[in-house]
Image 1 (cartoon, helix red, strand yellow):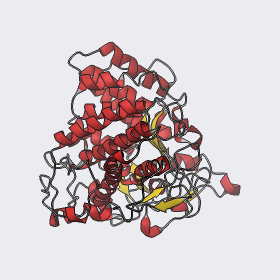
Image 2 (cartoon, rainbow, N blue to C red):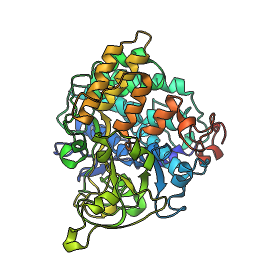
Image 3 (cartoon, rainbow, N blue to C red):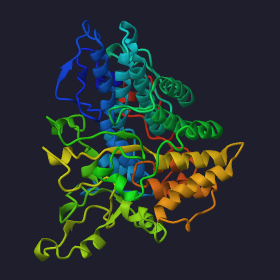
Length: 491
């Protein structure tokens, strides 16, 4: 199995010494390589290794892009029909096992898993004061990586006791997603037991983040009562940002609505085009979302991928502040800035599948990158927001065998009241209304495709979607060729 080629094994695994920032810095300036026989001799060694397990979170930009491009929310975009061919094929629902983008998702998730398993392998070497908390973080992260794999591929190889190495090539087989879910639940329950309610460094996992992720895992399995119960622990701990759009600005990062946020910075001390996205601390996904050849205020040029559809833009009700916070109407923006730069106005080039709309949540903004501009945007990814928790809890309470519709209504009302700035736009809390609300609230954040699949709506919403095939993405062909893995149906 080729996973081992992409997971950094013992002699080469790079872990990073912790820094003194107020957020978790996945690649601090002081770094060093692990040497097999001398590592894990101090608490600092464990701390550095745990930070290393966070690092692959920064590489998951494809997971987020594909979550909308594969859905009805957005189109592939880019420069042409061959620009990042794997994304173009996914947009058209003609993707196959020879897809570099899906292969990257596979190998980067297993990179994260192998790093967590390295810590599991060496758990007994040393005892120290905050060891329990550090391993709570490890178990959360392993669950996170496995959950991403299950969402994309279904049944996947499951290993938890040690890292893979070259000797495992061709020996691993797929484990049923139900068994993988069991392990994800175990890891998250262990994380909940070990983690504190808050952490000094922003971006590090807390008990509430683990509970929120477990609620989502339950929801994906149809365990609605369990989801409602675990999510109740998170309700009221966080609060919705008063102004919806503010949370997606730099000033809104790690704010009151942030349950779990992947940290990025524009201060990378090194970067490498041949080693993206691993070679930067920046958010490589951001450059994909901007207008091409842009000249104007506020924003910066991008590559015009992931362009929202006109249908998504039109789906928002009048007065819903989430529309313009989520989607940039470039024509309206240009019309409003005709006097910019002494009358030069806003300029941009139309990309492939141009709709006139761009992802305003994760878009290049002027002055927010550094070093190599394309690679170093500082925008954090809001992996779990409190609004998501409220809507998951609303759905779970509506769909539970012991439904609590008043509670679901309350949670849905909170989300809509914030969106409209009043209590005049409330809707009845049915599961269909909550599903719709999830897209108004979470559009262009990478959730839509998976929501459509888990709720059985994908075939009716996504052009070209084939039931029985496209619920899952294909296992990368290079893994099939050298292993005992079977392929997903239809591929």
